[in-house]
Length: 390
Ligand SMILES: Cc1cc2nc3c(=O)[nH]c(=O)nc-3n(C[C@H](O)[C@H](O)[C@H](O)COP(=O)(O)O)c2cc1C
Picture (tube, protein in one colour):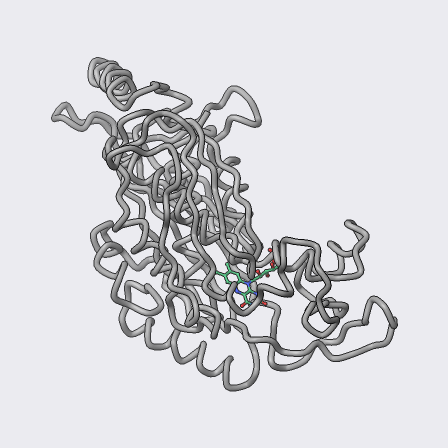
């Protein structure tokens, strides 16, 4: 089973992930992983922390001569900011002056702070916020890089774009090709396929920032070239839309997920929503005239592009103070502003790509198995023959 676990605190020494279940023989694409890490750091509206970090991956096990060897892969990303936090995030138990501990007793609304302090019975909220920070998603992007390489072997490519920032929204009827997403992947700030809207999105972020506020929005992840039959209709916990929804929802600040037409579909008549089935005898077989289902029917991929959206709340650290209560003194206070982002939608799209890649890789390996890439490929080719002769 392809799986991973992450460890690491926002201001700790490093972020770490251990990935299991990758077949032997998969080459590691360091360049594209580091490029995705850079993309996650960028986007208009990011704050000061991202100027400190320069994320890049270090692989410490499971890879030999650039390829996986079938054993668990361990990866690390070092936090440059650790240099400034060695005392307050010290691993060793040592005497540290109170002012250097950077204890936090003031919970920030919209964060894990208060619920986490109550649950874990700690009077230092730093024990909670260091892990609940979205910094953890950095290493998920690295894990997603391995999943992307695996999927690429089998013709599956993944990309994302920004569909809204605040009220600036890409119209539903705006058509685009998968290649359009690749064209904006590295060289736009908001990663919107419409350049006029891109500028309006930037203006919306600027306006939010100037008024001491933050702004949310939505991203869409597209998986292109997915064969039919990943996931299963047979059990509630094998449905791939359920897996994807959980994976996207796990990204910090995502508060809603939509597959295909999503909520819009609930307002349409069935005769307009469902994607009618056609057949051509030319190579290609079954096809659809539309893709409102977002490439998933009955918990399985249906061969169309998988389309999944994540809706992001405006992030909670504001320059406009929010009301809260100190957990020690129980006195009211106005939440103080710490260095923070204004808009994270484009970055969340990159994390969304990684999460979708991870889920598809898991579903792919569940279906096709294989201890080595050649075995996975043999199994996959057998399935393609089955489809061709259906
Ligand atoms: C890429 C990314 C960066 C983020 N940066 C910040 C930030 O600088 N300040 C902040 O208050 N929240 C930030 N967030 C959101 C918080 O991490 C998130 O709202 C918080 O952990 C509470 O979790 P929840 O919103 O999922 O309930 C960021 C989210 C993402 C995806």
